[in-house]
Image (tube, rainbow, N blue to C red; front, side, top):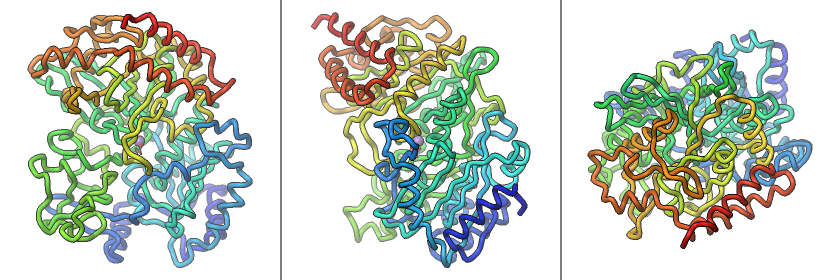
Length: 590
Ligand code: OXD
Ligand code: MN
């Protein structure tokens, strides 16, 4: 297949390094996909699911040591260490290449090399970027086909944009975690990834290009790449207010993006534009406009079910790939929550390791970070504007933490600068999306800690600058669906009921929502939330909206060392906001 000369030269250079048996250029055709799947069925790496219940859908089991993003093996390789910042692992480009090139040498012997041209962003969009991933994993190609726009459509854009593309070299290597590296070279816009076939490490369009490199490019070029879902909230007048929300991995972005509103009969409904990544640019009208650069979802399976996310269940019901879920004797995928009244899967279900569950009672049937990969176009709530080249205008940013204590259900920042501080100070309990301990609070500013491709202090400066440049920056909110009562149970029903919180935001944006001013921001008065039909005791609502001085002083203290790591680079405005928060908290009685 013809590409530009530079693209062909790079692919040949990679082949000289990795020595594949053959090179296949990916076109994106149906037939090609069928061939890839047939190969994986034949070698046993994929299993066909029940064709009548899940047409054209497959189960894949990964290597058991390769089931989540490995942040400790992920590097930003800039010339100067301070440009990567304390939020990233760093190696100089020279050191990184000297260390990792030998691992690529000959690593594709006996394998096929796939060259996958892909497009991030809708075709014809000023936001769109072309990437080319070289990989020796047919599973990666199959997933890229769902999560990005691959093949000819990308080459057409490449021809139109003067041949510009972002190269990414990937090999599963020998899957040994000791020889696993996810390397980003933002100054030359290059990705090298070896030793993992896991989504966030191996589908290079997603975290590597659309977040780490794109965040750097946005910084240099005056736009933003964020770890955000994009949704549209339609009100009873039929007007749609678009919001973008940053939540840490595996904390409900997909559920919120596809929310089915319990108040649909009163005219409130949610439209899905994206569930993980937003690229935002100022528009001529002084607002920020966002596109979803992806073409599909790579969602967390456990907890997804007809009660928590019916739209996701419809989305994943065909043309999908399931990774590390259980397999029932009827060849149906299984994970906790897929059938709400079934706590245990049927007898004879095969666990994610490929063994009958009865043989391994201590192994969870589905891995906690098991995933579905499904086309966005199959989502019943997909917005009619999700592929608009210019994107959708964003009226609100929502930051969300997973916090058993401290953060109230919702609050609004006083203004843009304070909103940037609220995002910068975010903390959340860790999840299974990355390797490491689960459930400990870590600072995760704008949910970008694992994804910001440069010094986070410069990233906050960029946020502040962007806000100053646009006439109508989005309102900024913070939510916490996960607050618990003293008995350890969740206070808020969550899922579809989160629509009620979005409705309050809508009212605030349009100038009507009632709120009280607190040291941390504007919190709804209990009567400002529409809680009709919900059986919530007034004390519960009070607890959901409470600001505890002691807890917040603790939070403030926890933020301080995090901010201090950035030294002189920390924007003065963020340091000032932090001090002002302290003064407001000190002034609280109690
Ligand atoms: C993801 C993640 O897969 O954030 O989206 O880990
Ligand atoms: Mn994510």
